[in-house]
Picture 1 (tube, rainbow, N blue to C red):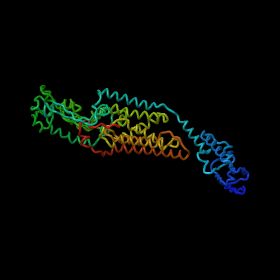
Picture 2 (cartoon, rainbow, N blue to C red):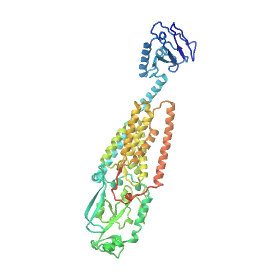
Picture 3 (spheres, rainbow, N blue to C red):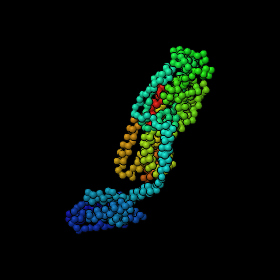
Picture 4 (cartoon, one colour):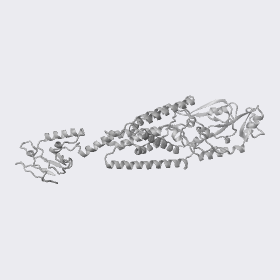
Length: 542
């Protein structure tokens, strides 16, 4: 370090050098100007940590010159800042004329080192620029194709359903007069209707067309136990009854006690055999599947249609019906035994994927595709279709898997999981490249607000937040695993490689735990509403 001091009677110079070389010493330029720093008694310090020698092969230390003109020094500094902003290396004249090599110059209270770029930092910034410019740009075909498929599938569902379900915010009760039941030929019957606020079909239709619904995807022991206890009593306690007090031409199965209150027990235990021999009699009461988990009642066809159930014209008792297979639709669910057709082998695990293309209604679809196009198209332009495909389906399947574990008896559908996964990708992109972001603090705050608002929306009725949270988690991990990155040196590159390995391990671990919990560890508790209610209990969307 060189310290130059002056005396009031003249100029004397003392050099205390940390590293000196007699071949590189220069004599300081003396000035007789009364305004020079030397004559004013100002102290000028110069430290050796900024610039290399102008000659890249010469590693010698150049002793700094005494600065005699402050304005001229500042002008030199301004020239260097201008060239630095243009990302051009400093010339040897600029770097040595005033500052020498490895030198920090302080003039008064001004630190001339602020905002200066060293050749090493310029090279690093140039490397970052090269990485950014080398990133390819793609057309977001995958996002376009997925969005088109979702729109087409919703149009097909609405056409098949014949319109939309009633619209509203809360369930309501409706009734129908003059309906034949086991109690009266002109009975008043009631049902509770849950409207679809998203302008779409009802819950039963969504399940039949691929919505996420756990009883269709795995054998549910709690449901099997429930209906075994109910239907196993039919063979011993149910009889074929002629309902004389209601309509003497009606016959059907009911309990012996109920039959004695409304009619007489027929000699034949098989109602179909009795009606075949006596054409004047009508087999009026048959099984009706009225519950999305496989529930069934014996009633008339008019009552079954009013309840929105599935009328079983070819069977006589509920113990002979595989209701769950008809409710799930798609491929038929086979019964485990001919003696217990109501116990099925559910195997529609592909609903983890099909649910991504099923939407609860027009409004639900519009909200999802807006977010999908804004986030997904931007990401795909830099990541490419294959990377975005992997991230999209990993986030979607992961979110649906978590939803199936925590809310197994709730029908859910939609692309909310992938959308939140894309939001997680944006978060990872910021964390990985915040060094090149203008105002990173502000951008981080805005991103955090968007995520919090999105998760708050998931707490509203009819929305499944488990799929949203799961999609966000899997989206963040998938982004670390698949996204292309720019690196800021060897340490940053090593750190990102470690994050890629960690993300792969965490994704594998979460999928293994999720599938084990869903298919093997079944700890879900079946509430009265979810297993004993009627169709239309609730529609949850994601």
